[in-house]
Image (cartoon, rainbow, N blue to C red; front, side, top):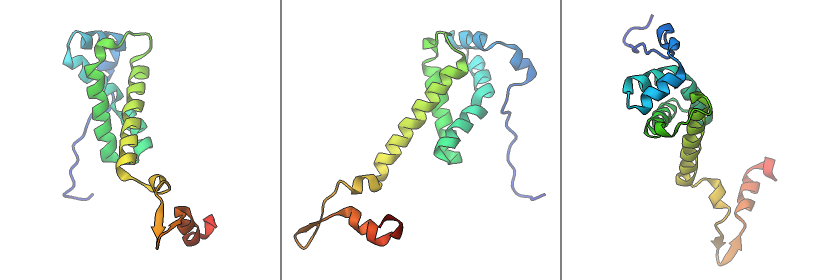
Length: 142
């Protein structure tokens, strides 16, 4: 066993006592402002929420940050939950929206190759096709 690396144990799923409380009861308590009820919902779903996000972003730190953003957004809008679906279905949609928005922002900030194609490069007064350089440098594209 390696010493020096201590990682605190974190409860990731609901205990049997917590599972006895219905999801809808917890949501109703949340809607009345009960933060302990929301803590129970977070405990029940954080592992699944993290897993969904991690599969999209492939970064543990970003996935935990986005999971936190998801739960904050859920808490702020819990009064709009009408109970027509399960809480998990509702939070799943929040997860997807938060993660897709983050991926879009990251893509724009990165300014990757998708933006390079729109730039006209000039070499000694003549226009060049930016894709041509890539084709010359990558035999698979030629």
